Image (cartoon, rainbow over all chains, first blue to last red):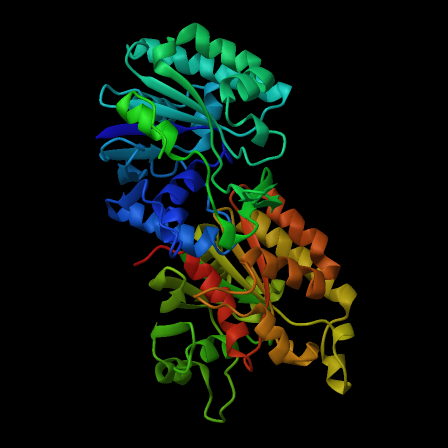
Length: 275
Length: 246
């Protein structure tokens, strides 16, 4: 089973990403079942998350933030069974267990004075021997974000070194919410068109610390765009804490992009074929 | 999730609660306590609602029909008399006031019921209601309450009650806002924007400020009336979407 952790700043869309996986809108569409991929929730927490996707995201609201209250033991494990049938290949079944971390854990990495033992507990758990991979979601791309993220990831890679995980932990960095107009065209080559373009410091920090066989870059969009011929983001930004929250604009046209690829690589260590 | 149910005197909190428990519900049913049981607490022999005297602590077991299916949730319901917001009441009932504050500081859901303001009403009964200026000033105190006494609140639901008095065509408005578990015309966000701009305009800025002020806090506005079941149920369907199953 692929044992994966998801980290990233607050509001980067970690829980929404998992909710979209659990619900898997493609599978819900009548008469348009994509045979290439089937997704199944394997435990109650994941089924609850799928319900939240249906009751909250599809009803035009945003999920509540994940909190540190209750500590690491209170964080749910989401378990998925994913059957992929790449073209011209046999079907493959992978089981993935994912834990979604509160955003402040990532943000605290960038704080040199931080000495919160609770946060260290989260980081230690994230880098345990049993963890196969880490998906890091980033949602902003301005200069100050690049500095901030570079600092946070520099500390993260140092922690990887302390835990002897530099050579055997796969790290997938994903630009989240890539349905935004500035990012959508760059989704096909994210390392060049998104990270090199917008987050060069972050890119350099990662490439210096993690070998290329254990590092991949992705672009994902939990909400997707309105249509194949309509690249407008299927999202609305509404007033929320810390700035804005994102909600689905047209629930009937919910079509996420790129959700599976990072999880597949983190679990299997190889690229997902065309499905 | 604890939900505290607050509002000034005579805004209709008790009537709304009783009507919610009416067994002829659509998408929301109150499983416990049953209607007759609740009625015996809340209605006087003369068939009018008793003014809430002390702070009532109850469990409500609610079943809501959501898009993903039926969901049952238990709510710790703290019902307050309108008088608790008066300093004189607080001085004369210090223990009850402290107990209420302890609950509000733990509560994740706040249901605030408001009266309409005078300028939206017609007829002689309008004079029984606050002016817009008084209404706005009173709301500032609610904002302070949310900010200082509700640190754990994740959802604030504000219901402008007695919509039958200020909405021209209540049935038409209700059908526009209606919730259908199989697919509604409006999302929650669109309902909130519509209601906020149409009915809460004088305090729209303050409501948006509350939304921004605390991480993880969501404010949702509704109009309610005991004479329209779909509107009455909406705040509870919204809350049930977020509450944990029992």
